[in-house]
Image (cartoon, rainbow, N blue to C red; front, top):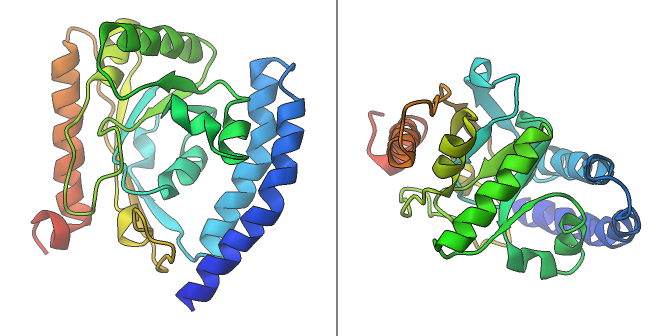
Length: 242
């Protein structure tokens, strides 16, 4: 059944995404908020497919911690699942993404039409400066900025080195940081064609006020909360009490 669900999901996306992308590209002359809205129906449709075709819904913990203002989300990254589903958890979002993604056929082309924040894997002063400049602009325009501080997807039960770009953006702008733990990789494997049915746990942590903190201190607090929470929601993988 998992094989059938996965193939049906891919087939539907392959049929829907190319023509929809062409429509999004034609809207590029519009203001950024309107361009962002052109992608929303496709995202909502994909979220529906993930829940009802793939059979991977989620339960949300800590919803009371979601701020009512633009914020910086530092989230665990295990699969492509969260790139869709976090857009339902948080409203008016943009992602920090590797600039190479915009060259992916259709998916990348569509995302290139909306105000994402481009970066690269380096931690040079110039790349961090671009991140802060673009992030400041997006926050000022009411967008919540979603960043995966590990930089790339981690295998369930492990973690990659956390990078400080998002924490620096918080210190420079004063925007609150929202740590997010999730276990999507248990159902949507990093390189797995076929997905497993199951309910992902998405846990939202208390906001971190960057006032009076250094970027390193903000990052340390976010990382500590995320990794501690991972041991609670996936104790069999992260060594927490079962």
